Image (tube, rainbow, N blue to C red):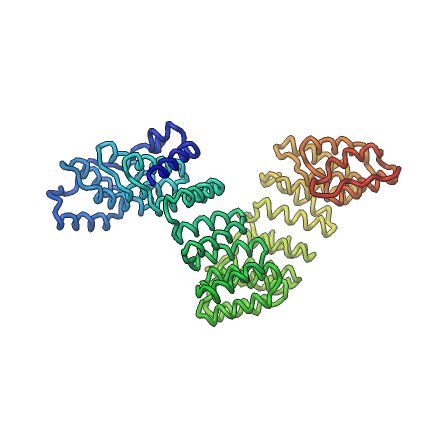
Length: 543
């Protein structure tokens, strides 16, 4: 076992940290906290049982960093030094206060004065490293302890796995997990399995996650509700609803594991996203029958689904009757749904209700939803009126809100209003972003104002807002629509240089103009290069 462990530590050394870090396993960038004081607490006189209890009680009562540092300072000046148990208690207190860098520094001080560390010490410090997204240093701490006879345990490796996953180092976590099992260094428990499953699900590797679930059965390690909920949630996010339902039935009928609110909410969200509101309502009703109280997240998922079914207000009233307080996200979801199905009057009444209830005031996102909803339903005057009523506040100085209105005015066939709004940006000191420019260039192209569209395109680079793929496509469409072919080839070459692609509608227009001989057929090769790789090659057209 020792040989296997040593081999693992050596492999980790090469994988996760440099030799310099291995020789000095502490976070060298962390300086001693300035809060360390020289004032000492009342001295310890012995290591008796009563004194040990007194020390433990003192550590439990510590809620301020200064007090912890004062106690540590006193402990280091005692002769003989207190036991490692007492230092661990103090380290744990500091860590619970989330002063992770300070805990690591205290660990460094402990080793400097010769306090012998144990597995509890290294586990505490390893967790601190991982919480600070410094998992590589966590491995170094484990290696430091191992060289001094401190063997890592299942908690150690679970902490390291979780640290790697928090840093999105999923493949490294998977390699470590496999080495632990192959080398029989420790027997993974349900926490370790679930941690690894969480990491795999985080990047959508659902098949491997389910494989680990089956391995747990083989090894006699019983999964818990969190294990199943993690995989079910990931399957739902990847629209694998049938697989999620199979696991849901398995956990209840075959494993006797009762779902919790998280499990139900994940399934309901997945079913709502897929449009299966009947099944979502069944799961929702089952949840209530089993005694679980739906939370605001569960209701928000249902609201989002019912948006498409025009039943959203009915469910909202049910939420209110249940005494569940909706939050601003709930209101925003309902507003989006009502506007989506054209119920502008109901949406505006709900918006006014938000304005009159100070405990849930509309936020910037709410205003954007209302403005966009009104514009999409061709109620531009109402949108402009609301915008002007905002006054000179931060919402009225929001480039996103301005862009929504500019786009709305353009699509409603009001180019004059579009120009007025765009010119207001300069007087208010607002800089257009790439979406604002794209909307304006599209508007100019739609209205036949090709020169203005070209000027805006050139202005973007000058003002530090480089065009994106959408910019090139809307400009090309505007030029083609108005029979302006002189700069088409140059724009296509620029797109090729930038790695941009042509949209399907742009490609279709280009090919139509080549077919009608408005454009030279020699452009076909260049156009073919700009078709997205996953799309179809541009077809050859007889000239």
